[in-house]
Image (cartoon, rainbow over all chains, first blue to last red; front, top):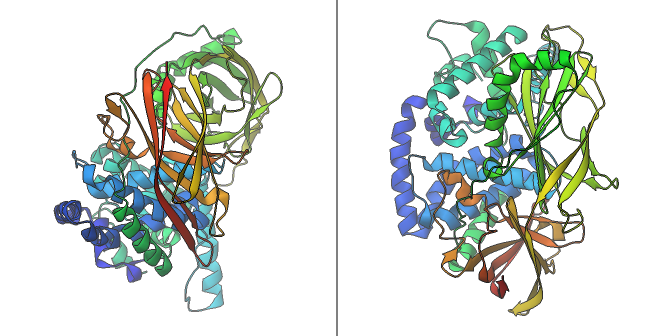
Length: 195
Length: 374
């Protein structure tokens, strides 16, 4: 994961940097509200995280289309966007959540899964290690399947989208402390079972 | 991915004390959730779409504050004294849980949900239908599931596992489902939404049968056997909240492209506009959408005071294609109280096929329809 992280994602993934990122982002939003072409910077900043989140939330088949719709909606709504205490990234992810739900609705499918895909073990040293890693990822995935949708979504927002607890709080409408507490509890439960 | 990268990237999840098992878990979760970056071609097509949208002066979605209405129901109560005693212990926790769950569904908190209050128990698993709501657009049912100690919470699963039919056996398609765990162990809540478009129009009450094919609860011990119970079948009736249907059947042509507004269905849970337009550019009709807004004397869905939840700004203007091939655009705000002249404007229509190669087409309007609602 870290090998593929770009600077923006690292900023978003680290709570200590979130305030800096939000300030920076507010400036980008103001610029985009004044000059539509400046929206490109916001797009570049968030497109991969939104796409990864939607892969988990709605499936790979729909992720590209939904990502496109997220940014079209955000672009359309930007002139009226006001932070109201909600960072732009949280607003963007709320759009993504709503559109994913709407897509389920449009296709008469349900968001039962919300699980990550099957991980590839990568370039392991030998076939035995590869097999072991594959087995562990499968086991972890089956543990995730036992979690309710709310917990799965928290993990998707944290790990797939790379949002900080504060940003997740903005997306889900909870306090940052509550998000941190719940993430900690989820990890503790998973750790006990995962070993 | 190396462990120190996990520590760098997820400091909020890792204790200052070294915990190898936790770090391994975080690393593996990061790997498992790692997805591909957005396809390059998406950037190209989105650039073009944003340029087009910019030139079309894309509108902003908005919605009206909902009218809060409550109606106390007289739903059937518990089935047996013993069951009532069991449920009594969790009732205090269950009520706020259901209420909390309702806040996750667009428009649900303000709907006059009727208490159903029916419970069934099998193999120690108790399923309770808590509340329900019906109008000409949507049926919502909230339920709770209590599993025995030793088993993890279950919201039953919904895809293909919960079915709703009316007294005539007509199946209502499931369109959404959500779940939430309670603070009380072994109790969880679920909310399922069904498309009510096929219900007979003008009915005051609808008799429904909701079936949970089975409820599965995983054992809390690693190698324990899961518990499966079911089917659970509930029969109940719900009042159908009144709404209005405006039959328009009018076609507007812009740039040689005809768009027909067939009708508008306005209910407390949702307003729907049924549109017809041809899919082109080799893109399936299911992948075409319309961006529309509605307005009347002194109000406009784009500029109405947004509710407290900013995300609601973008929950209006959803869309899907129904079984008759109509493109349905919805607004989740309550427009029942808006009378007089209405104008429905289709700002643009667009199609996007994201299979390879990605195809996209867009036609800008506006197509405008004016009609009167008494």
